[in-house]
Image (tube, rainbow, N blue to C red; front, side):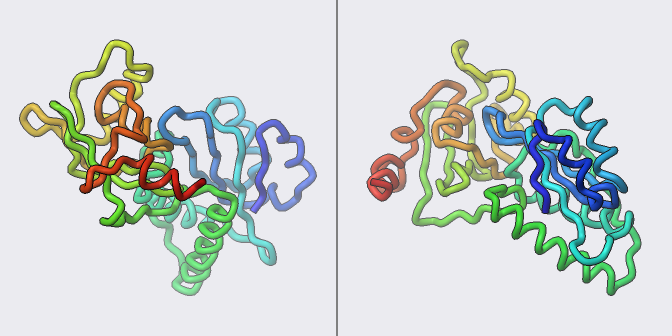
Length: 247
């Protein structure tokens, strides 16, 4: 895996392997709710990245995966792209607006498909190793569930190292306070993440936010201190449960 900052693309010119078929992930880290990524494949990353540098303003670094020992083929990286997009959309930890369509599975011989499945296991490990959780599916723990209730909101979720995950089935507020800082982005997320049930908006997927306060603001439609707003079934807030452990 090559980790290449956008500010140092000249480095690519020194790497012969990056002028051959490769699977890659472009990562942006400035999103207010959660990071954005683009997953792709190419026969020559050094050439392909020039187009991304011009047309995709969001990203700050690229993760590029190539075979260490033998070259992988164009069909191999197409298979990796398909598998990566499916897994990243399932995890739902990154915004994948530029990967609207999931590519079809290319026709690989069984032995080669098995080889690429093993390759993808390495991809997931290496991405996780550098702190990129794009393929990690969060698993809620019932003993750590927290709730947020108001007149128009009845949400639940859990907190871990990835952030705060608002769970499917949560009811979130339809209205938003005029002073809310990211109302347009929230509106866009509501269109993607919720379904209408009468006069209620219900989360149709699990959504992970980078902070407890961002999660609370999304659910309430207004600014909120998530550390005190989210409470477990005993009435203890997240601040009481987690912050003493960090001291």
